[in-house]
Amino acid sequence: MRTYDLTPFYRSTVGFDRFFNLLDQATADGSPGYPPYNIERTGENAYRISVAVSGFSQSELSIVAKENTLTIKGEKTASENGNDNSKVLYRGIAARAFERAFQLADFVQVKNASLENGLLHVDLVREIPEAKKPRSIPISSGAEAPQVVDGSAAKVAA
Image 1 (cartoon, rainbow, N blue to C red):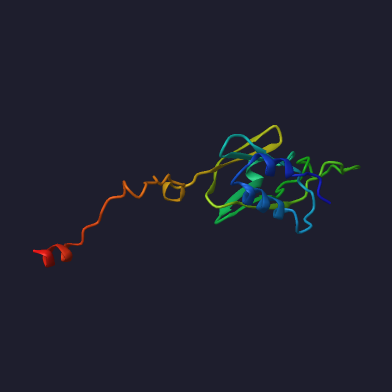
Image 2 (spheres, rainbow, N blue to C red):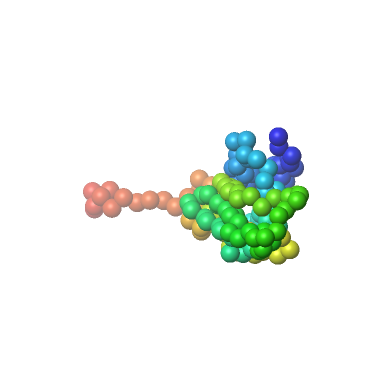
């Protein structure tokens, strides 16, 4: 069951519809809700994905960006208490391995990742190349249009 609604973003963004559609598809396959995450828009072309990874150290997390897919993995390597003689009577803190994949829109790049207070923050930026950006085309009237003189017609008249 989906617990978030991206429709407010559809109204306030023009040209990023595909980005949010791809993020919607990331959880459409029925993947479990662990670990929970937020997607924020931090600027005109900037986004942040925050994943709750409490209990995981920096060495137990990996982030891989390949083509248009961002994959975040977490695997616990050591015992939780570090003491093999202790027995856990109640385990309420999830320490299971996870893998979360996000489909990224074209020209979206991962710029930074940081781990603070149990949250993994991944900063994304959409950088459109100059060749792909729209350009303004001037419109001229018929009287102002430059006249093209064919060189072969000039030779016949002479």
